[in-house]
Image (cartoon, rainbow, N blue to C red):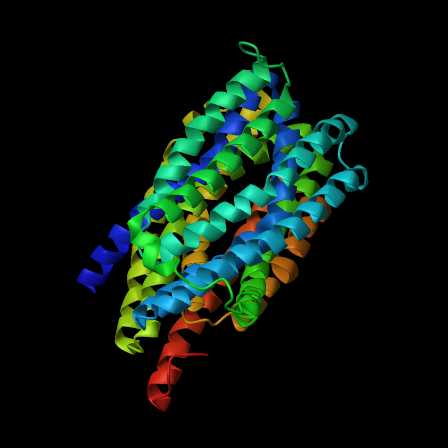
Length: 449
């Protein structure tokens, strides 16, 4: 177990940094929008970002199965299969990005029906149109990084995303404020900065993959090879995984809509707290991704003991990691909120309270995403999808409306409800993982589901 934990740490640190780079783009967007433009544009950016991420979550989560399949093929020393999976993953990325990009435009067009204030709606619409256009380069980046991550070259995505974060910060500054010869675009300048950063990410990782000798042998697959079956396999496994992401993100995104009904101050406060919680969550997904790769490698080797060690090691790391952030949120909530806003006392006071709630659900959030990764490594996708559906759509969303509006608990009621869904998901996904291992071991069956 000690060795497995060390290997998981080595693999997960670059993934965590890469995931942190991705989420910090949203955080820096909000920091700079809040500082330069104020609370209402901050709320509009938060609404558009949440809805855009919701629409793209099916592809964002679904493409993650490619790294797992590649790690399984690596465990079987199947070089040809790895190359075919990479090309099929790129094909799926293009298909999903076009479909979901169009869906994002449709959601933006219908934003008037979401019951937000007129100013929030006016600002959020064009912001989301620009984000929808950035779906294609984002998905190409995600698809290309699956090859590197699946082969345990996790530093590739790390360097690309960290450098892209710097690109995003630079263009946020110049496009929001109109620095040098750049036009002053206000809130839409922040969205354009995200588009430019994602174009850079896709270009950088594709150039690296095709120009570096590490990947050369995996790219020598004949272009006449039929990829239809692999494409269907990725979609068959990836779409349920994508819906796992969708159900959770939908609960949080629709919570944003509900909170918008409560008022602009509540929406801005929620946006600050959820940005902080999303940062730790995305870092936990780095451990989950490393766990999925390690479990997938052991799966390919048909070694059930290593599968259990890999899954358990990822859980131990997540609990320790989220515990640190729990303490940080509980003890430094006022300071963390002050990074976003200082001149709106009603917003900052409420946000500081919500950060305390965020501290308490760190454990459930981390555990559920890590066990999802472990189950993905076993290609077990259907039952986990059902568990996440119940957690967020049967528990969290109805409970959010009930506590916030019927019992007059305001935005705090929404956060209590989200915590309840996360806890349900964490408990039952963990039970699923260990019961599945026990059942397969007792029956002396292959690990495949």
